[in-house]
Every structure is written in structure tokens, then in C-alpha cells.
Image (tube, rainbow, N blue to C red; front, side):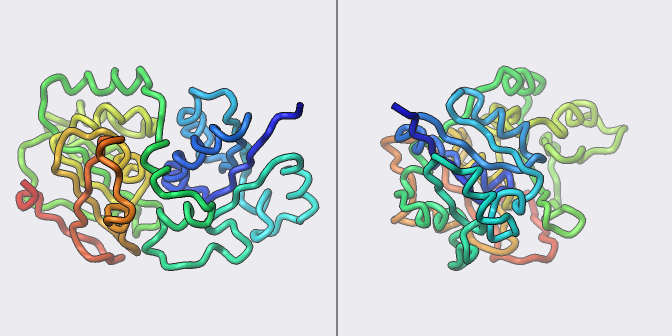
Length: 278
């Protein structure tokens, strides 16, 4: 008997991939193998995410045009690549680009796949890497805030800036928020530019989270975070619909925290008074 294989083709930003982990894991319960299409620049993070299941494989491409007809791949090439598989395509990869309001950027892909959104919460799973534990150990007993203020599409890469910063340690995976003469500089430097799963223990144990609408938000909303002080910003769309009565997680099945949106969506730089978040 031949193996049943699913070919998963969704939006290919790292945050998009993380939001589709539940879908991929669910498909794996239905198929002998799931192939996940991904871009070369996300390959290492995707290998980490699915390293615990040898029957979830990656199909790595340089650009969507190498696979997706909407972006220029010929139907002949697409059919040859996906031969003998069941294709699950969603988001901007669909023939008409998915469509629908941008404020459903997380939920809509599940609708297009005809999957209940509870799968997003209940089938989410990523490996617990020893590197995550080792990185967190650098903090010892220090209280700290985890900040991610970057996004690829933002001006200069920065979405917001913090005002009235307290003496509490700030951990930012994209940049050191201290000058070289600051007492926290060397420690903060240890947390820059690691694979995204290396931050899981640090995120879970932070005293506060302030995140842009990026891959770190996509990851954090599905972790068992300890603090209730979870905040996010938004440039183009709301993510709050995932916590609506229709879509919110079943607390008897998974432990998650709701993130509070700090402002209405806006593209301009956002200034956040950190003292007001305590």
C-alpha cells in the first residue's frame, strides 16, 4: 500500500509558518507524511520546529515562484512536484490570493483549509530544545521583560520604542537595548539573533512581554506563559479575533494567555510608556 502524503503550502513568512504548526501537526495525524513548503531563509528554524517528527519533511524553495502557480510556477511543474500527494494550499498562495479582511490573517488560513480553528491551539507543538534551557540559565534569578520591537515590513525594521524604561532587565532578540558601559550590556548581548525556539524558556518565564506583530508573537501566543502581563502591537491588522468567544482556546485543554493590544493598528512609530503597563 502506498503512503498517504499531504503537501502543505501556506504563506511563507516565519510567523505564518508558526501559525500553521497546528494545521501541519493535525494533517500528520491523517497522513503518513506531510511535506511543508518553505523558503530557504526560514529553513533552519523550520528544521527545528519539525525536528521531532521524521515524517514531516520540508520542501525548500528560494521564492514562491519556484512552486506556486499564482507567483509564476507553471502548472506542469507544480503538478510534477506535488504528484501523488494531497495538496493543502492556503493564504496568498491560493489562485486568487486568499482574499478576505486582513484582520483575519491568523484565522482565515484555517477556514480556507476547512479546518476548525481549535486545531490552531490544540495541535500546536514544538520541541523543547536544550539550547532554550541553557540560554535561559544566563538570567539566573533576574526579573526581566522580553521585548520584540522589530518586523520585516516596518520602517527601519522597528515597530515601536519604549519610554520611561525602568531598571528591570530588557531582553530583545534583535538588538541590544543598552550601551556598552551599561551593567546589562554583556548579558543582553547573549540573547541576540538565536534560532527562534531557543527563546522559549526565556519567553515563558518573563515578567512581562511586549511584542510586535511578528514571528515572536505568533510563537508566544501558543506557549504556556506564566505572567498575565502580555502585550502586543499591530501595524496593519488586529489579532484580537483569535481571542473572541468563537476562536479563543479551550482552557481545559491548553494553557494560554490572552495578549492585550496596546493601540489601534497604525504603521507609524509607536511610543509605549512602559510604566503604564505595570
